[in-house]
Image (cartoon, rainbow, N blue to C red):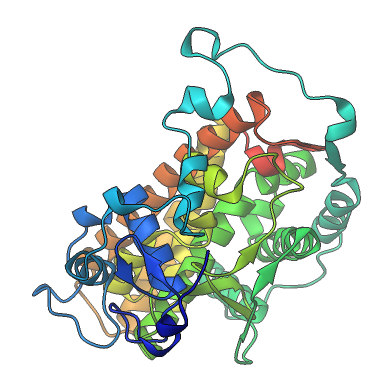
Length: 392
């Protein structure tokens, strides 16, 4: 894209920062042009203003930012594919799933083989061995005077560092593998603080861990993001990648070339919106609830064992009921003795709503990823695929 010298002295018509050319009909910076492209693809026009009046100032919401783009003259009809570097990538977005998969709808369910030489393999065997050793050699993690909820809360806080997180600007294959290992073992360690979980057969504990760890991390990470957003007033695009690392989800450089032969834009549009860094469906209710550490622990535990009850059924359903009963008693004690709160039905309802949203979104994401695996959109094989694709 050729940039006229005069553009270097003109500010972006949307955010007033230095511009980088004419994008979609308005002089704008790369960040605002990229935002407008996403806004068109993801239909941000259905969103409401976060302040309710449509007149955000400073840290404006997505709805108001989109309105500024439109008022500046941006339009999807003005995509300049031969001139605009950013907008030109939109021609790579297939109009439908059959185009994305590369076959017409009447043979969409016929799998296309990918040569073995073009596939990679991730072996989780040693990682599962580490988790198994954690379960076998948990040691004495029970503390006198601590009920189950407080023990699990202690474990949750122990895993979260107190240092200020830094920023990560690029995520490569090794970063993702390290993230998986650290968080898989973090969830494994947290589970050892639950007596009822430790009573389960070892194989069942491992199977449950492999199935729920990603959703557990999702809720915990989104809770950190919501808490930081509430305390610091950071923009929506800033979120937690890990306990000690923040990312700008709109601008972070994410390498997925080792996962799929499709572009990041295609992969996110059809399979994993927003790079799966944060979920607005969780952020908003978490901001509304502002959960304490005990309440977050309660939600994580309820999700874990409700999922296990559906997964194993039978005798586990009885164990699930016992765990829920124990946690309910512990939470009741927390509200009365520490929060001095007698009427907490409203908070309980909000917590269960968050758990239901997590279960729903986790299920939908799992189905999409499983389809991606079936149709060879994902070109990686795993020694234990249930860790990534989740058990049904």
